[in-house]
Length: 160
Ligand code: FES
Image 1 (cartoon, protein in one colour):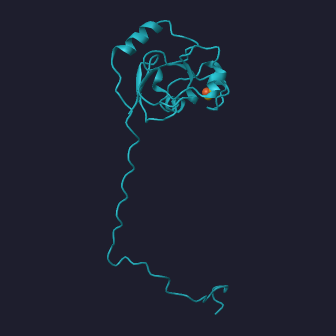
Image 2 (cartoon, protein in one colour):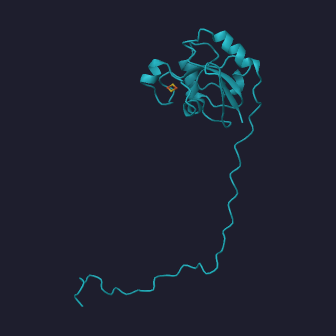
Image 3 (spheres, protein in one colour):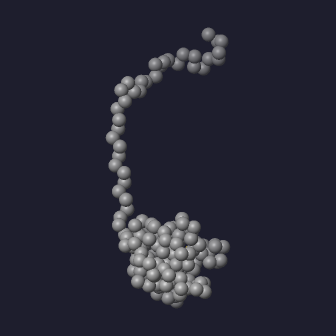
């Protein structure tokens, strides 16, 4: 499975091939947004431009190609920046969250992240489990109702 190495956080997170980078980050408790995005974001529609990530380095091709939304919204940003909500993880990669506010020790963080190899990934989505054969239980036939009349329907107790 692909591994996303979050450079700022120093965490490796596994995901399935094709998972949305924003959804993986949120699921894993990674702080994806700066203050503006925390106060209000578009929920992954590609409209608020607050879910920036930087995927610089040799793993930049590990995400799906830029979408038309990204081409438009990121035209004044570095080529290595992506919108997490528009990016699908195809194989293992390094990601710097909130690159608009780079960490003071950013170069050291990148060097540390690049020092150890990433697992290869991707493989594939796991096969669904085989359906279990239905078991027959002796004497477990379901019988229909035995009383079929409307006896007593609409009568109050003691009216007979
Ligand atoms: S969450 Fe709004 S652009 Fe990504």
